Length: 148
Image 1 (cartoon, rainbow, N blue to C red):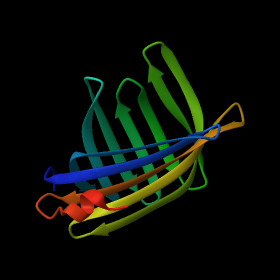
Image 2: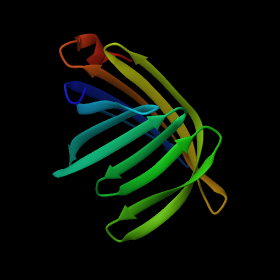
Image 3: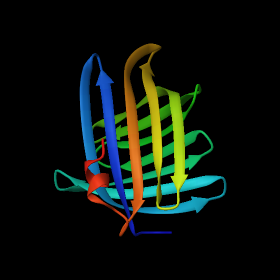
Image 4: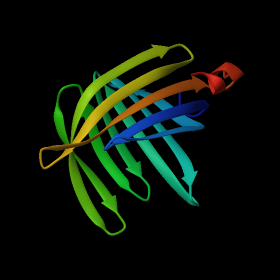
């Protein structure tokens, strides 16, 4: 089932009360693995190619993002994990506590939602939500592109 998919990623980040929302629609690879699935997609930002790989097993989401800010994190409901972030000028880590992970797999694609809170030194920093829809190319309709 590699290739031939379109992915829509909607994200909401809230840090100190400031909300940032984004949406990207691009091509994706999708494959089933033992106990779950993987999604991979690339997007171009500021002239750079950014690669995101997501692995989902049960209620656990693992993300590896190769971009200007490289990220490795695991989101699992009710469990605290350490995430790693690499920037051009250094590295840092944050505690990530998963709030919710849901998946709906259908014949023509899937929906994945996950949310988490971030902490540093025990202090709350922010919250993030990701709403991901994956559909097989050829079955994509205008509704998918406009869907709320």
